[in-house]
Image (cartoon, rainbow, N blue to C red; front, side, top):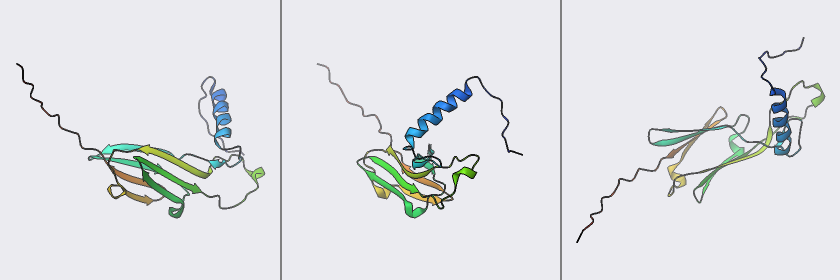
Length: 146
């Protein structure tokens, strides 16, 4: 008995899924099955307590294969999710996990240094705390009228 997921179908859902799959072939450098090549981790960014909190889902990425860089106001996350074993893909019914290199970059406030950013990595989730820029107070300029 096959395991299936029941859900109500929308018109043209199959066609849009086909286009998405077709696009992903090009994004993944023609390396299927298993999507080896390039992938992009999901990231959430929120503002909390005067800081930005960036959370990146990196399941299966070891701490040693993860690099965070700050250069010229650009914060870059890069790494590799390595495939642990070689399987015969003929036995898979569905294979959706991706492997390979990833890189995501984000603009950060000016004047930020590496010392300002704190990072934690636990259970495949990278959390970066980035200080938000302080709002500048408006300056009053006296205009003299003659």
